[in-house]
Amino acid sequence: MTRVAAVLVTPGMADAAPPGVDPAEFLTAMAEDTYEMVAGLELVRPVILSAGVPGLEDIAWPGTPVLQIASPADAFAALPPEEEGVIVSADAPDLPPLLIGKLFRELGRAHLAVCPAEGGGAVAVAARLPVPEWAAPDLDEPDVVAAMRRRAPGPRMVATGPGWHRLRKPQDVARLDPGLEGWDNTRALLT
Image (cartoon, rainbow, N blue to C red; front, side, top):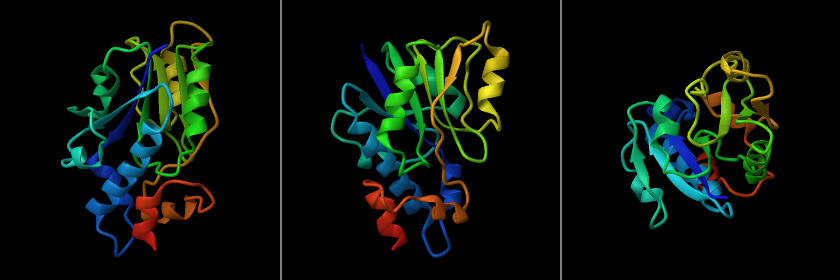
C-alpha cells in the first residue's frame, strides 16, 4: 500500500497568532510542527501543499515536495499518484499521529475518512486516490461530513474518526495540549 500525507498551508491560518506573536512566524511554526508529525509517519510519503504561502521549502526535509496550489480545493488533485492520501490542515500543530493512522484504517471500509474539527470543518481528510468528483472535501466547510455524505452516491462511503482542534483564532491556542510531544516550534513562540 502506498500512501501520501500532505500538510495544507494557507495564508489565513496566520490569523490564529496571539497578540505579540508575529503572524508569519506563527504560521511557519504551526506548519513546521504539523509537517514534522506527518513526516514522522511510517510508510507515508510527506508533501507540503502551499496555497499562497512562501518559504515553506525551508521547513521541509530533503526530498519532500513543496507544491504550490491555486486554492485548498485543489489539494487532492495535486497529490502525487499513490493508492491513498490524507490532507492535514497545518493549523493543528499538536495533532496526534495516531489520528492520521485511524483515518487510513477507516479507508478499508469507506472511500473517505474525516477527522472532524471542533467548531466545524475538518482537521484532516483521507481518501482512496484518485478522489471521486463527488468528494471534493473542503476542510473549512462547517459540516464537512454531512456535506460529503449528501453528495456520496451511496451509503457508508464517508467515515469519521476521532475529532481534534484547529487554531483559527488567537484564543484557540488555549486548546493546545501541553502534555503531548511535538509542536516544539509553536510552543517556543508561545513561551
